Image 1: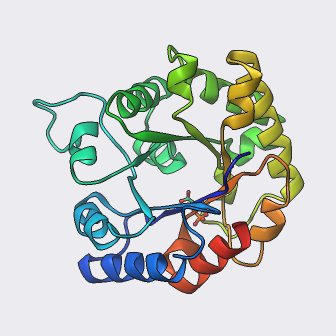
Image 2: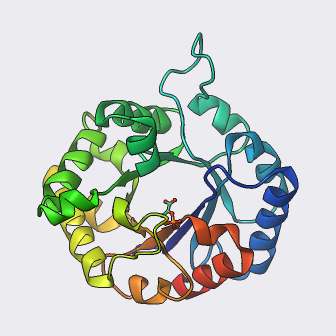
Length: 253
Ligand code: PEP
């Protein structure tokens, strides 16, 4: 039985005050659900991770980082390692978010190293995959998602992959207000689960949580969650508003 998982990616938003207040409000108003019925995690910008982790330390809300570097330490100016994230209370990392793939230019190979480093460092990576609009229009969704999944998990044992959550985020739906229909999401989640069974085994495929992300709102979250292979939601814009994010959590729990 896969427990629903709602994750809030704050991207490059908030400040010290608003990040702590938002996290506290989410933690206090979802306390009756989180942990038992649902997993909830927030992904603040790096500089607010420590204060947010402290603000929610007595709750069941988990904190994750929007990125991680694959080397453990050393001369890598500006980068943050998995052990540093663990040290300040992070549980999750996002690896291969579409903005890192398409704005920053991260490759499948780099993302694979970040997934591996997260697991070795005791963190739980969320590997994001998803096609561009031009790729969907050219009927290449399956090909792109398969490539991103295979390359992103390359070289990892079944045991290691059991630490991974997958997020299907069609790039054309992120921050655009254009959500995939629940059928479109289900189709790709089904492809991902079958692929995991092929690459590893059916037990791992059945246990792995596959989240949908892309313009999720309180108005579409329940319909998306009604699909058999949609196990949770990765929420960007709507996770910055406590009422909206709480409504999404309730609809998923
Ligand atoms: C995201 O940041 O992963 C995301 C899906 O953003 P939004 O919900 O704003 O589309």
